[in-house]
Amino acid sequence: MPREGSAVGVDLGKTSCRIRVRDEVVVGEGLAGLGADGSAARSAARIGELLDGREPEGFAVIGIGAAGAFAAPGAAARLAALVAARYDVAAAVASDVVTAHIGAFGGGPGVCLIVGTGAVALAVSPDGRSSMRDGRGLLAGDWGSGSWIGREGLRAAEAAQVRVGPPTALLDRIADPRTAADAAVAHPDAAAKLAAYAPAVLACAAEGDEVAVDVVDRAVAHVVQTAAASAGDVDVADVSLVGGVTADAGFRERLRTALVARGLRVAPAQGNALDGALIMVQRTNLPLEGSIHRA
Image (cartoon, rainbow, N blue to C red; front, side):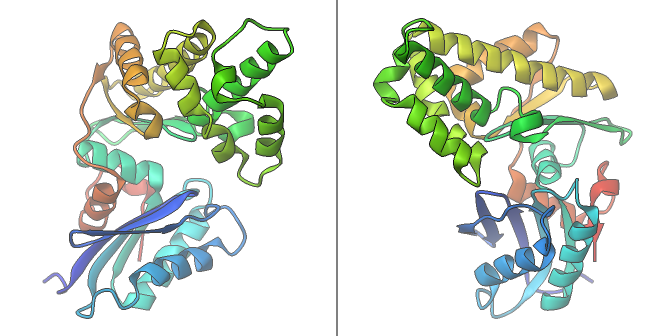
């Protein structure tokens, strides 16, 4: 018999930590990811800050999607054990990419293409084969992501300002691109700081600015290549679009058109990463079971 209490879903990212208890979503600050030293204990403490005292009747199960779990499976397993012991429940931890995929496809096959601050595609076949492409971070990858778009926008704006590049309306929104770029690069979370300029690029592209349109078109080409590569690895064709950049109407339409041109189908997401965390902790027959740490 399942334990009485509330099922809890956690989406622990680098920007924010979102927790769903019943119909309420609580939001707190994120963490650097499970790859950092002591990250499992800090992650358990952050979850505790948002959960403790919220449900007097207790919890039934807790599912957690955490940034960095793919690269740090040991920390993911420790986080599951810490949370399970703290609340005396069954707990499951996987990468936030995994919970996003499970939420988008209800635990079924397909490609989850995430374009937010970073960019990554996770493809899963009906028989459980999987392929993840990109998600390599600001220096090594994240091609076409929000941070990539923001960086390219700053470069284009500075080139226009010093007259080594074509004029662009980006200068109307980014008055001092050199200072902005220097501040972003020096910040501990450079990717997020660069991604903050992506909306300016997307807005200029929507208004027809040729320089901004070029940046967006190149971003679309990159993420389509990422999605197509992961899809081809496991022979699936349905792609669900997730992440803040895909919420921009112009970017989403360009992306949809380009994916269809590559023979892929855009499938509406069935749910989000919090839904995926809840599905993950309550089912043990998922195609991505090998990427889930349970305690």
